[in-house]
Image (cartoon, rainbow, N blue to C red; front, side):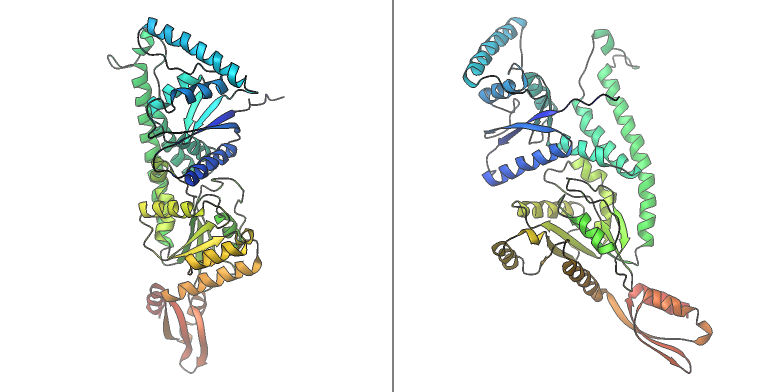
Length: 444
């Protein structure tokens, strides 16, 4: 019988700095709780503090002791000579004793602290020493989720590169003096050797990823003449649900953050002529680690090269405006913000009349839909098809009977507006892309 993995119990820590509104702070901390839940972590409580900045200690003296009470730590980071450290430890024991008398023993102890911020390696070490358990930040949690959900070779390489770049500066020396001098080079410490191994591994993975990227680029080049629409948006906004509805595919749909990491490309269904391809892309989130954005840049090329972006937003989420802005920032970073786009307010069935009216007033060009309603699926399908009409041109051509083998190619590549059989051949009036127009005429 396999042993059960020990349950990870965490305290969420939020530090509200200057300029961050109460609503944004609460939204971010709640989202961090959902990220933790996605990893199977049980959040036992939250601890928050308002500070001007997040300094080397992360939390103030009092809050640090409150957190240590929940983890079984001392609340201090010993520094200085041994005598000074002993005094600090004695003072800490006394302070912790008073705190336990005042607040009582916690019902359960946490074995993980998750801070809703991007911490430096030094900040992580300082707080971890004070609380006596592992400390991680928002970036670390997101990378762990990506690492767990990556399924294709490409996604696994992308995530592993980002994970190693995150871990490298957080590696700490261990062992005694003899071990710290065990490297190959003169004076090379064990820590330096480990970091060099990580850098070499990153280089190796990057070369392998570049090979896969080259293959993906070839596939995208083959689709250059095809009309393409890309679903983009915040994680869990409903992109994969729409992918299933618009392409009649079996794409994974889960009510989890980052359920989709791999770009999926399918044909729009019901099929139309010319063909339209739909691609689902990785979701975005606030404070998405830069190394993840860089690693997934090739995957996000689907969004950059699409003729139309469907920007899917969860209209029922109270924090949707911030999520909308985060998506725009990432699209801008990858150079995909200037293309044609349609704002899609999803999950509108979960919104009341007042909310729908507000959305219509502020974003009159957006479409309000729910992937659960067949009529809305048909409506969005029609909007996609009609939006691509501006990319089509009209062509009149005659296919001689001695080249009747081209008739099938015409019907496959163009929308046939009129077809008549005359003495000199089949007369067509077509709607098609400029590239297809040139190609068909070249076959005559």
